[in-house]
Length: 144
Image (cartoon, rainbow, N blue to C red; front, side, top):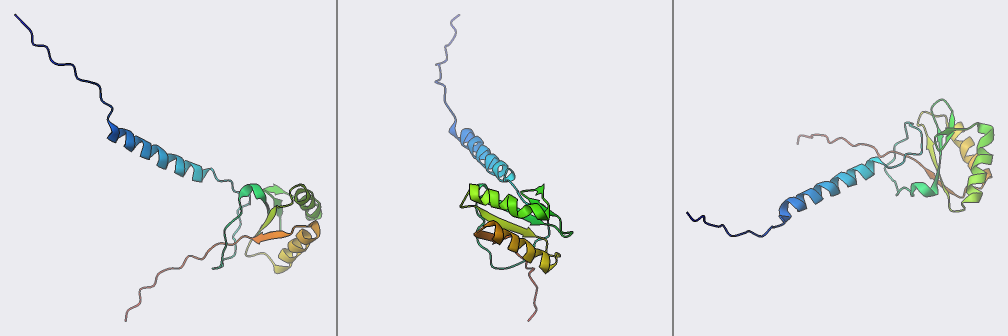
């Protein structure tokens, strides 16, 4: 008895599943990289404003945070009020293009914010940015 031989089929690489896999990996790494962004400031309730500009890159920033109770932080590290000027001065002189970002809680007294700004000015900080949050506007259903 003779058996029929089936012709040998060439191996194929299917492109559609490969494209799907690559798209999935691309989206996964994009989302993962967003989760890896470095938040240098402490968690405070920032004031709201509508006019904003882009945030400088985190490697060029020094974040000064003042919470509602008046506690002071420099890149998430607690610092005393008496040490702030010297710490900022040392970092500004080490990196001349450094942008100082002020995160001040919206419930903080105005005098404390002015005190920090005065201290940053004496420390030689020339580029200053004040952190804010954008307001969330709700849509209203108006009937005419």
